[in-house]
Length: 483
Image 1 (cartoon, rainbow, N blue to C red):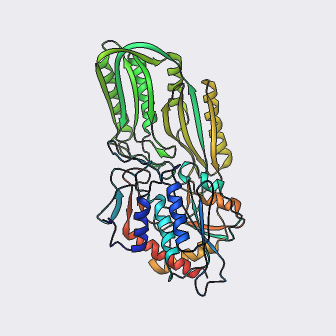
Image 2 (cartoon, rainbow, N blue to C red):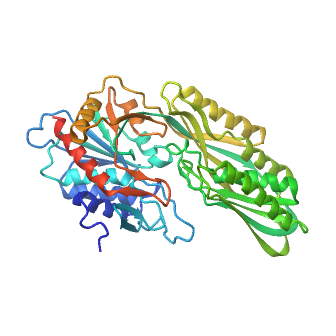
């Protein structure tokens, strides 16, 4: 039975529900890409699917718009896959389980994928219609946006003729995004070695944090579970006989980690002392995050019997802690040109213990190319000093503000007419694919916008149905005006 049946716009929510039933996490986009290709074939629409699973679908302009300049409609097919502890969804093969309550759509125990499933749903609803006035359309649906905009970077744009682009990858209604930061993913690897030691095996867990998008929420003062775990481990290793076995936390480099864990051995009769130290540190951290992330928790789960187990050597454990405590983190610089805009930041999104190394994965963002480079160099420098190696990939350019934008002016005018107020024109610290397309399509006039979607990249993600309806009506009027 359909969960979204009866919600308006009906066609949009029908396609959104179909999309949500298809597994489409980053790196797992073949099924949803094939779904879009099948959609185009059924309707006789010219289309192209590349090796990366990007899809482009063309549709001629409707009556009266046949000779109008073409327009690109753009969104991405992949979603961030996060879930609550205990959730049994397997993102590799399962879709999300939708629920609707009090005007909001969400998913049971997981991220919703409104970012950017709603853009795909809009696109399919427009392509499926015979009575929506619009110029010739080039619908560009990319993959792996959430892990470095890999699809857009790999896309051959040579057959795209439009120089006007609507990007539906914003999550705040009434905001028109016209510029964004560039970014890169940097992975640092610290080598580790093991020796055997006796003690009480203990699981240390940091959780209860809000998490969020590392571009959108990086300025909200939210705690990073991996960074907090580093503080806990340093405190315990300095005050108690504690040896580290493993560290882990986070799932996506562009999502602020909500949880992190470490497995340690506690020696002798120091279990109570460790508990007291952890509680004292938790009190300090709760005070620090009282106004932004007050539900943070630190817990220790200790085994009753002493065991002899492999632990990190003191030197390699120290290297890991030095990295956790001293890698740059969070906001590095605010913009002096645009009040309130984060100019440069980074997020430690993934912490993972592998066989011979500990992996640190960062999402680095900046509106200033040289500052982005400087952050990467700081990571590289510290990593090398600790005997490790750092590599970067998935780099994407900043999207610079365009002074002369007929599309922006048209969208402002329509918004004023429909809602009696001006939209907010905004630059964004989070990365958008607009920068990549602006780099390969000369003189591209582009605006990004979208409906209200809250707590994206977390299991609390929810999408406002009335906002979707208003954004749909706004979109139809934009297409109508682009004659």
